[in-house]
Image 1 (cartoon, one colour):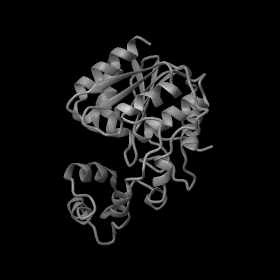
Image 2 (cartoon, helix red, strand yellow):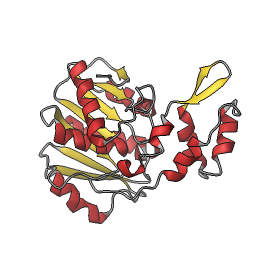
Image 3 (cartoon, one colour):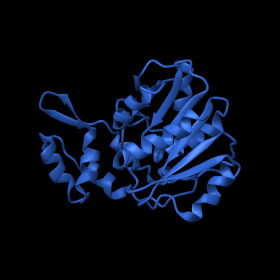
Image 4 (tube, one colour):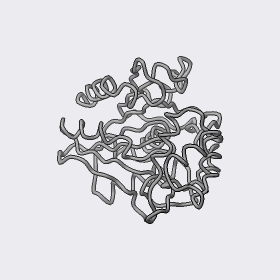
Length: 258
């Protein structure tokens, strides 16, 4: 089985796996990973399939993404791991808790819940899919061509972190956009009603985000009876980037008690 790419930071014996969100990559979390490495964790910044430097595949579901992480842990001989997942990575984390409860010591889910979400990424995906790198020679041109599809400059800059030089003068995307443009329904999938885990976990909401609503907390408690909840003030869906000090301090305080 193919093994996911990772950037491993730190030398400690407590293992923390971080799973990025849709259209992101492990390196989005590098600054926080260094902080966790400084307080006793060895941090695995994983690129999930079809993202970053990991392998591409037409197979894509949360069960498969969770199996990828399980294979990664088997390959690296990891046990009793802590896992932190943001958005899509949070859904992967929840599925991993159901698939391999013996593997996880505790986990954190950032700004997502076990429910089904209505697909809402199609405009971004259409924009990325139309980028023609025979006509685009730099990041500014890519941003200009993406702007009719993605109005928000911050979101465009986040997406364009996936640009890289395939060869001198030739840009490409680290995303398998041909597969990802067709998985909006899959990305929105919720957990099956039978999926219940008693592993200690923390759900973290961005105060300004609508990914977690007040009406969602009973759903969290149903699937994860030991779940605790915190809210990150002055932050939306990218809570770890918008209020990183509060996010790190609160999540780290919780982790150190597990």
